[in-house]
Length: 64
Image (spheres, rainbow, N blue to C red):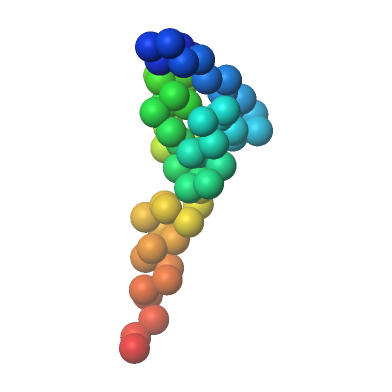
């Protein structure tokens, strides 16, 4: 992916981008999302399970 004068390499199978934002946050960066949309894929499918609604509901399902 090219952004102005910068070029980033995205590897969807390893979930990495050369900007390193995806690796550090586990949330697909803008470069990865652009590639996913170009290929007709959904970024939600590449989101770490920690950020899924089901994980949130499971974590807070017990009474305090």
